[in-house]
Every structure is written in C-alpha cells, then in structure tokens.
Length: 113
Length: 112
Image 1 (tube, helix red, strand yellow):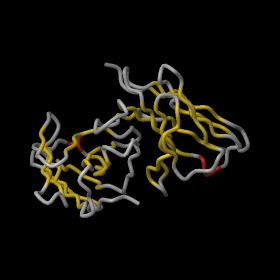
Image 2 (cartoon, chains in turn purple, cyan; image 1 turned 180 degrees about the vertical axis):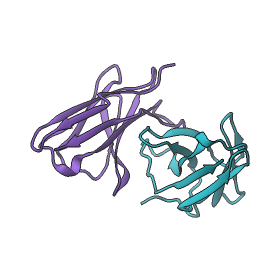
Image 3 (tube, chains in turn purple, red; image 1 turned 45 degrees about the horizontal axis):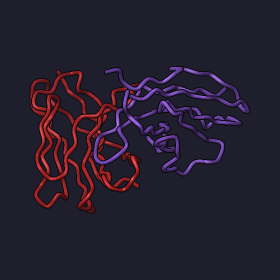
Image 4 (cartoon, chains in turn brown, red; image 1 turned 30 degrees about the vertical axis):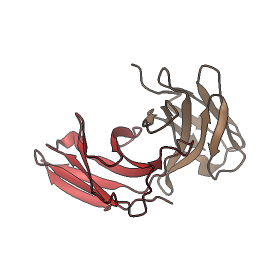
C-alpha cells in the first residue's frame, strides 16, 4: 500500500508570494491533517479535513487555508508569505474515525527568502 | 499544550533494550496513547498505540500502567537506526478530530 505522498519536497519562495502544497493520502483514508514544524515551535497542528469538510483548525492566521477533494487528496495554501513561514509542512492521513493512527508523509520543506 | 511529559534525552547501547517513559497523568477514559518517532528531515513514523492493555508489534512493545497515568515504549534490541526523537501523544478516540498535540519528545541516541 502506498504511503502518504507530499509534493513538492522542496520549495523556495520570496516574501509576499503565495504557495500551494499537495498531499495524497493513503488509499481509503478520508481524513487529512496538516502540521507545521519549525525548530522554535516544534510540530503544530494546522487543520484537518474529513470528507471535504474542515473538521478542526489550529491557531494559525487566515493566510493558511486548505481544502480537500472528493478523492480525499488535499491541498494547503499559504498567501502573503512571511519569513516566519519557513518550515517543514507535514501531511498525515487516517481512516478518520475512532482510534486508528495517522500516518505521515515526509513533508514539504518551504524556504522563504 | 501537550498532555504528556517525556525526558528530554536518553542514551542506549546498541543491542540493548531501550525503555522510553511517558507520563500522562490527566488521561481520560477515551484517550489512546500513541507513539511516533521522527528521524531527521523525515515525517513522523507511527510506532504503536494502546488504550489500557499492553501491546506489541514488529517494531516495539507498549506497556501501560494499570491506572493509565504512564506508559513505557520498549525497543527490544536497539540499533543505530533507532536514533530519533520519540513522541508520546494521547488522543481522544471519540472526539471527532484527528488532531495530534506534539510535545518536545525524547531524543534517543543509540551508541555503538
């Protein structure tokens, strides 16, 4: 079974630009969650989508948004990029109900110049 | 905030068992304990999870105390490739959300 796939693996942008990251979950998984990892703040939850609906949201500004498609694939978008948005962005998928664990992709490393 | 407390770092000799403790004194009845590890520059890797019974899989064993206030992850024969940051997380299985709250984890170093 293929794992969680995130594209691209690396991305370089400049301040003020916007970026879209993509996540393909494990086949059959309906929940996709996004996390941001930085050296200072560690791993922080951004949001979760389940059946194309945002089910939970972390404490991030509105510049961070996401969506999920009918095939469970998900994208997250960051607008008006700031230097502090440089981070590893991780996607995780799970069946979405009960106690089954999430499985993570290897992330997209975003660098803002 | 994370609901778990873990030591910042631990060392283990290659071939020996690594026992990683985790305190979760405020755990509630519906919350499971999950363990993940993260090797540098990779995404967190799921290891094992449990509710109240001890669990074992091909990677590790999870021992949960009877009062469920703490647990121990056991890597029976640690190798150099087990060097990683290990995260212990509790999550409500009935909360309708998959949100994981990560703490700082334990940096395990396996020495030759």
